[in-house]
Length: 318
Image (cartoon, rainbow, N blue to C red; front, side, top):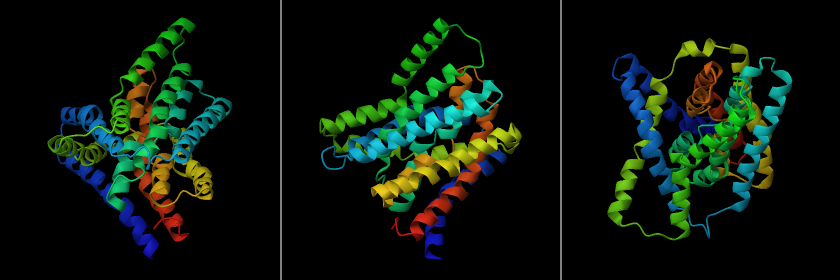
């Protein structure tokens, strides 16, 4: 019973904030323009500042765990490659392969990882290291598969131009910039004045509640009916298969507590809403993506509670 209560306390508060966003939107508290502005504010300002502070707080000499970062990178790479190969073999509608692959491996690691870990342990813990190993690859692989599996017939030169443009966009991505600048500041042992720290901390503190509210407010049950078969398969891969494959390996290596929780978020949290934005911007229909984002957002609270309960019961999470 103690493990069940621990698991519910870990996931339900985060889910309830999303539910509140859904209810407030239904009651007319939010407008479509407000939600769009909020998404931009989180993506371009508060989340990069939060990631900068997380990375800056790391002591690269004592806290940096190379084995853990490499495991996160390897799990992300293997997941992406295997899902892509299987999609090429089994999916008959080749126009949706890019979308299917992206939503099957790419998690909302930055926002939800921070939310769950802080809810459980009170600080970001191992989330920064998990993000170093996974978030840049999430973006790079998404660009690769969405470009090469574009439903539009394009010449090799046009595909090259798209990849070049996408690579530039990755370099300019605020999330990756926040991580890179934070790591640079940590490596240089940059001292931030107290007033700057407090200002950045205040800005960063907006990220989780604002992002969760807007995720909930953007929730549309009708989208779950779109491409229901592939949506179910992608959701099962995202929430069940990837954690079932990699979490036992992580435990075998010796990753427990905060490291294990961060891996659960990386492997088994919902597909990030950014998937839809990227898919649409790169010429894809977006229907399968939006459907899977909605279904995984709804179901991930149940599956993450399950995974936390299992590994808490086995003594790997304290």
